[in-house]
Image (tube, rainbow, N blue to C red; front, top):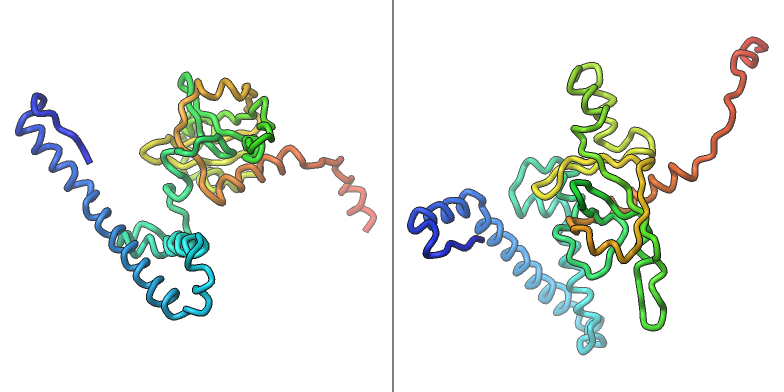
Length: 255
């Protein structure tokens, strides 16, 4: 929502803020989400807990039923159900909407692989495995130096400049880049209101000490399975094994 101070904007400021809220559909979306949660809770308790008393009785006094309920609620927010809840035909079947990539804002206390950072006009993304950031009890945090990939705004890349100059000629190549199918070296991060279109080139990396991360702005982080896909592409790119090309002309000439 929004806040309008009495001394700033007056009636016009209030009217402008009301129009902004109405045009943004925030209230409508909020109502749809609340209705979905209410129906999901009702159906779970009546159709699962109530109809399966023998199964649920042993766990009714511990947290197990809470885990089951919350996991069921999370599962109910699948892509297809989100499309139904929002009534948005722009969510195409078999295609990923840019918003699916991210968890925003990044609210976890600890850093993790796939977190997007910003500093001095540049975007970065954490490549160090999430498990290295965990500190439990007497077990210290493993991470010392943190590996970051430098994310370049798409419009600053040669791929974009070539496509922009001749869209028909470079359409296929540019599409492969956007879909992260142009080899394991590149990984694309789509634009949303809180992030630009960004391209990761795993040849562009930087190491920083863990204590330096506090000087970076935490923007967002990649959700599952995109964070895992990014790390897997990075590992594949640097774990590949090359070998000399076979003399194909010699082989063919002797067939």
